[in-house]
Structures are given as C-alpha cells and as structure tokens.
Image (cartoon, rainbow, N blue to C red; front, side, top):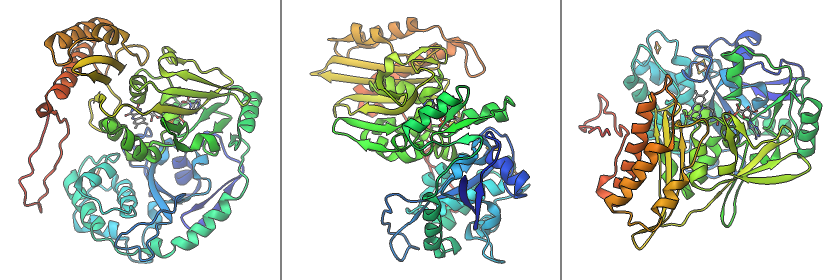
Length: 504
Ligand SMILES: Cc1cc2nc3c(=O)[nH]c(=O)nc-3n(C[C@H](O)[C@H](O)[C@H](O)COP(=O)(O)OP(=O)(O)OC[C@H]3O[C@@H](n4cnc5c(N)ncnc54)[C@H](O)[C@@H]3O)c2cc1C
Ligand code: FES
Ligand code: FES
C-alpha cells in the first residue's frame, strides 16, 4: 500500500500499474489537470509538483515567517512526468489546485499576476510550483537562487525576467500561508503514514536487503529504480511498459549518507538534492558539475546510484568518481563487495554489476587539501542538459612537481574513462612548465576516438578536451586566469546596478 496525502486528502493505493507516472495519475485518475504535460521527459517543467516531507533533522531555521523557529516540512519540486507512485509514500503531494486559501490566491500566484509573468499560461502552473517550493525554503533567496529554483521550467512566450522578478519579490517578503499554519497537523498525519507497511501488487518496495534480494530473485526481469529519471523515459519516450518494478526508496542503507573519517559514504538511492550540501562542503570543486546537473526538480529525484548504474558514457558523475578514486559498494543480499570506479565501467552501458546485485553506496575518499581539482562540463544548454564533454582533473603537486594526476572523462568514449598516461608520463614534471602542458595535450589528443552525434562532432569533442586541459593548466598555474562560464547576474527592470555579464 502506497499511502500519502494528495493535497489534504489521505490516499492509499494498493493496486496500480507499476509504470504509472505521477502525471498520468493526477491528470487521468484524479482529474487534477492543472498539472500540465509538455515534454514528458523532465525537460520543460510543465508537470512540476511539490512533495512535502518531514525533515529528518528537524533543523531550526530563522526566517521571517517561522515564529517557532522550526521548519518541520521540506518542500521539494519534482517532475511528475518521470516519477513513479512509490516516490509518494509518506509524503504530501501538493498540486497547483491546492495553493489558494479559499478565494485568496497564494502569494506566489498573486506575485505572478502582479509582475505580468504569464501569457498563454501553459508553463505557469509549473513555474508557480517551483516558486512555491522556494517560498518555503528557510533562506531568503537572492537572484541566483531564484534562477536555480526555476532552472527546470521553460517558458516559450512570456520571457523570464518578469517571472524571476515575481519570484524574487514574493520570496523576499514572505508571510505565513495556510501551509505554515497547518504544518504541525500535516507532520502528524505524515508520521502516522510513515509507520505503516508499504507494498503494492506491481510496485515492490522492499525495506531490507533480504527483501530486496528476494524480490529480485522472484522477478528477475523487474528493474530496480531510485529516482526513475532515467527509467521513466523508457515508458514516456520509448513507450515500453514494465509489469513489475522494484523501488529502492525505502531501503535504509541505500538512503543514508555517512561522513566517515576518510571520506563520504553516499547511499546509492539518495537524490542529489539531499547530498549536494555534503558533497559541496568536502568537494567544493564539483560545484559547477553539481549545479549544472539537470535542474532542481530532477536533482530532487535523481540518485548518484542511478547515475552510476546506468553506465552512460555521458553521465556527469562517473568522470568525477573516476578522478576522485571512488569505490562502488555492491550487494546481493548475502554478500557485499567493493569495486573501484576505474574497474566498474566495462563496455558501452555494461558495468561490473551482476544481475543479482545492486549498488548500495558510493564511497568518495577525501582529497588532500592542496590537491588541484577541477570539474568541467560542456553542454548545449547551461542547465538541464547532458554533457557533450565532461572532464575532471585531480592533481597533487609537491614542490612544483607533479606527484600524481587522476582524471575522468565523459562524452569521449563508449564508457566514462580515465587516462592513466597523464599520470605515468607527467609524474615528476614541473606543473607550471609548458612542457607539462604540451605532454598532456598530446596524450589527450590521442587518447580517444569519440563519436559524431547530435550533441557534438568527433573533432569538436577532441578540441574541447584539449581546451579543457588548457583551462585546467591556466587556472591552476595563474590564479588570475579563473575562467567563468556562467552569466552571473541578470539585471532586472527594477535593478539599478549595471549588471555586468561574464562569459567564457
Ligand atoms: C531532464 C533530464 C536531465 C538530465 N540531466 C542530466 C545531467 O545533467 N547529467 C547526468 O549525468 N544525467 C542527467 N540526467 C539523467 C538522470 O537524471 C541521471 O542519470 C540520474 O542520476 C539517474 O538517477 P535515477 O535515480 O533517477 O535513476 P533511475 O531512473 O532510478 O535508474 C536508472 C538505471 O539505473 C538502475 N539503478 C538505479 N539505482 C540503482 C542501484 N542502486 N543499483 C543498481 N541499479 C540501479 C536502474 O535499474 C536503471 O536501469 C537527466 C535526466 C533528465 C530526465
Ligand atoms: S512534462 Fe515536461 S518536464 Fe514533465
Ligand atoms: S506563458 Fe506561454 S509558455 Fe510561458
């Protein structure tokens, strides 16, 4: 039984298609058609809804509208088109229909009107839900945070400035809303649900490694999934159907993050939204990669385990895991084993994972403070796009000489790959010398035979690889050569500053 609150109503689902998406459920079974379908692939944000979840840490916050200083629920956006129903268990699903308080629009809706943020209106419910989730974050957002929060929403006719202005204005002047007033009651109702046992006829939701092993043995053809941001595309884009699916969302070991003495042990099913803060604390150099990984609603669902298990040659995290010497922890319910990232990816979409196994966690060892680490992503769209080329370097220099260099690359081979020659041939060379740069450049020129495809040509990919190497060399040898690829400020009509843009 999957139990949750649909807006204010308790729902329990015992029977449903395993591959029923949340969007289908809302529009076709609940007649909640405020949530729209645009792309059905997580790219446009028309289907954005919010999941409110009891905050495990029950952390104290100090914002304008929390008199009791406690934020008891976390509000996160998700794309309902790529989400299966198991994601709902124990949570409150909030749709756009639920936002008004009687006849009064929610402040985010009113702000959208006041700032003329909608024309045809098709994208508007999705934007409203992203604004609503941001409205309930503890921090007062700045313009950058607003842009991040709206990064998964596309508007084809209004233009973004009024929508950004509407969001910034309302989120910087928050006041209590009906959700804040009923938060304690909702937490109680959700806690009651969380205590109940979960399972459905087609969607198996094991809660222990023994149960997961048994489910896999009983249904060997059933896919496991965490965030479903990859798997659901097979349903919505390739029109496949799955009779049985196994959700990893209730597996305790797969849903915890442990800060160990020597590194981070990240549960494979945890969404990026829940691991970003720890990752950025320990590996701030991954910030570009993490902030440009899909967009906020996808990151609120997509897991690191899914990104590794799908074995995609253009996944963003595998290059980072290779360069940081991560270790993949596998389990089959009886035996656990560990595989270093460099031995995990075997061939195109083929990994060291056996059919009886799943990824339990990923261990990323802490790096020496003085290591020079950079992670670069080149893609057509800044957010919400897969890499054409991804390169991650992890360099240890002692007294100006290269002691060790680890690397990871995506988009240039059939698998995410490392280039060992960079290490063997550069060890002992002076990092600032043009000799070191030239040796690396020649190695990378020869290292791969990339594909020509819609994302990029072979020539472009090789040129990009060499340019990223140059960027790394310049940035780490000359601090004044820090190269920004982001538009860091978008001026608004109300903004008095000149708003300089910085492009690469
Ligand atoms: C709009 C959009 C944008 C995207 N942008 C990016 C991007 O910028 N960068 C990027 O790298 N990816 C991107 N992706 C791809 C996807 O979001 C990621 O690969 C994500 O990390 C997958 O995680 P998931 O939990 O959703 O995987 P799922 O869909 O749940 O699973 C993916 C595959 O992995 C298997 N699997 C999942 N977890 C496990 C486990 N613990 N053990 C064994 N097998 C497992 C499943 O069986 C399935 O085959 C994007 C996807 C969308 C829809
Ligand atoms: S319909 Fe486009 S993101 Fe879901
Ligand atoms: S208002 Fe028409 S797509 Fe945004």
